[in-house]
Image 1 (cartoon, one colour):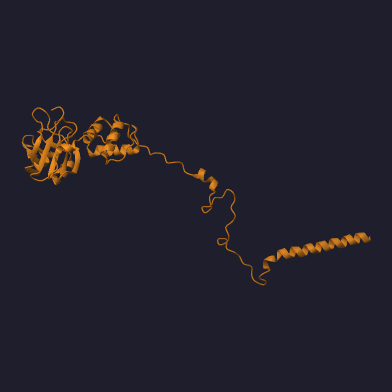
Image 2 (tube, rainbow, N blue to C red):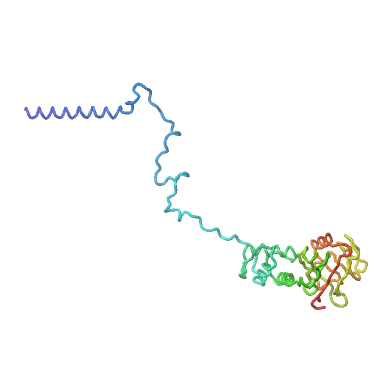
Length: 276
């Protein structure tokens, strides 16, 4: 009986100690501010909750080890609808030589940049259709411009209009400097309509002259020899073998020549048009 009573006393002491300890933890939150009302914290101002493994906040610091796998793949080249032309490689090289139309990769393949450059060139020289496909006509025009013989013009003194009959190109120089870049032209055909070579002088100018023999208007007319002169073409410049002796120009070029040249300006024609 004495042993059993001792065990009961010991158990009671242990139980009492447990109640005292539990009370201490239960009221520990009020320990520093006895008698004050409990403070309720606004969830929006409280500390951010700890995120689980599937949560991905915008402010979370990325794991350096995973940066490589999270990089975006390189952008794919945008599609274009320009077919590869028969003269693709040659035109790429020629346009790079000319400059001013964009940089083309000389690989004989079509790209969006190549297409844009070829279209720009075709529109500039009224090559139809201007769809970006490098065909024989595009190559022919580019080659004529690249091979233009600037040195033969003799434009060292004053204002000079130069016409390369061989390459069917024309440009303007002043005191040895090119002030209007070479562009295409169409001069006289054979059969007595050839544009002569030599040095002449502009002696008649009219923004719009009437041709009695051919009954057509000649916009931006600048006469220099025997009824021949510069003027805007009234037909497609690429589908005819030649004019009746005049120096035909595209609209943009005819306007530029009319604005730049003056009465008594020297006109120097040289070479010979192929087939005449």
